[in-house]
Image (tube, rainbow over all chains, first blue to last red; front, side, top):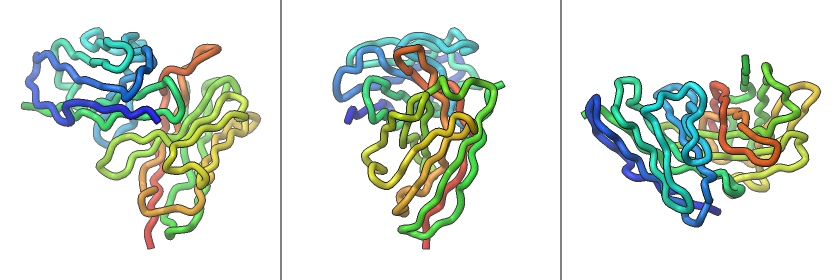
Length: 107
Length: 122
């Protein structure tokens, strides 16, 4: 199975900060990576697919990059609505697997 | 509008069984792969099982292989998860999830239900 490792597990940041979250795969997944945002008590929200393609309606301050085994999610100017937990998920092979999550907290 | 509505969760004893159901609307169900994703209390997301559009191909996480069975009733617009030999570690909120797919590949979950809670405890 492909293991997905996210770092950091928690990140403290301020409004307006640039934030970067890393996701590493245990083997190459090409660009078959998705990112999600989850707020407490809510279902996840689809943000990015194929590593760098923004889902419709997602603000342009979100971006994704990477291929192979290393990927990043960047928020260029953190907004109040962005405080949440973020997950990566690989779509290269079954079983599909998620990263452990990164909680973005208010500093 | 795409809607996914899970049901069937509840309290069950270890070793018991439950059948989750997900009623969908707002899209052509037979054309889309579907998954179940769970989240234990205070924990991260775990992909559990998936199936393709016609329901003939099924996939499972190692943690549930041999105990859970996913199925898809396209005429009824329903996705199911039969869960047998339940364990305490299966306690979680179970989400029904619609996959975003092209004709050849899926690349993420674009719609989620609100989840149904399964608690395995004596």
